[in-house]
Image (cartoon, rainbow, N blue to C red; front, side):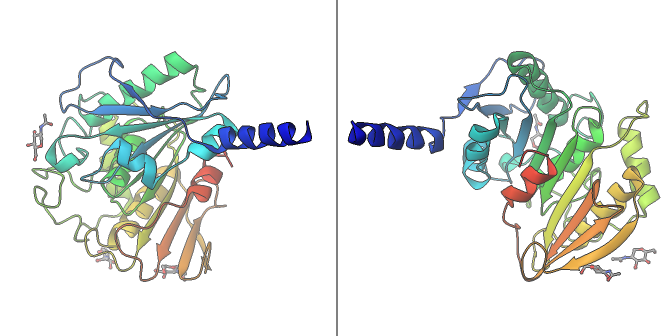
Length: 294
Ligand SMILES: *[C@@H]1O[C@H](CO)[C@@H](O)[C@H](O)[C@H]1NC(C)=O
Ligand SMILES: *[C@@H]1O[C@H](CO)[C@@H](O)[C@H](O)[C@H]1NC(C)=O
Ligand SMILES: *[C@@H]1O[C@H](CO)[C@@H](O)[C@H](O)[C@H]1NC(C)=O
């Protein structure tokens, strides 16, 4: 009896900690000109009104790949939220963050397709519309910036690893290291906060509401997407969110990282990681805290 109970307990533990398989979804609806794909992590004990994290892979990656790099499954099982892992398939699997269609609310580019995925998941799983979040690495961080800029009424917050400000690649012929205009990634696009905010407002001219909260990371040793892009993102989002720089906290959350706090720290935070290259490792715990899912 005791032994059976122990075995049952062990089996239950195993069940609780083992991840579900990703579900491939094809029927989210709407146009899909660049052939995006979608995999979704739905936890066993999905909340009745779950939160949703859209997690975006780097160039060359895929939803399946990013589900390993940014594996939120354990927390999803505990908290009942859903994770969408979309895939880009064009242009070395990089997200389009440069074309006129992409840099426009309902412009018909990748952000529109991604928002159509969100709409589908909201309908299918009863997602709480106030708890839709985006995160990503490299190209996925660039897209996080663009999603928050083009769909500020959909996303409540974002976190971001080693990307660039929304609009930084405007006019570039492509989005991969080989197809893009490298000026932005090389850290040579330097705009004022007001210039960045204008670029973002022009992506959704009718919008007068608040912009999503943002937390963004970059490494000082990043030679692919230069760290000047952290400052550009902070100028952009501090203007959009109307928060000024408050203080630096050194060695936070770990040695070598500097946390740059804006306002009271509830809307905008930047992290500069000394001697960290491309990309800053995903800090799942900080992501979940930022999304109030910890
Ligand atoms: C695919 O990417 C290339 C850039 O490499 C771009 O010119 C083309 O428009 C993209 N195609 C679609 C359907 O988005
Ligand atoms: C960006 O431009 C401003 C204003 O011209 C200048 O003060 C600042 O040093 C520049 N920053 C970089 C990183 O070039
Ligand atoms: C805060 O930290 C950043 C990154 O290390 C640095 O560029 C900036 O000068 C610091 N600001 C202050 C006021 O110390």
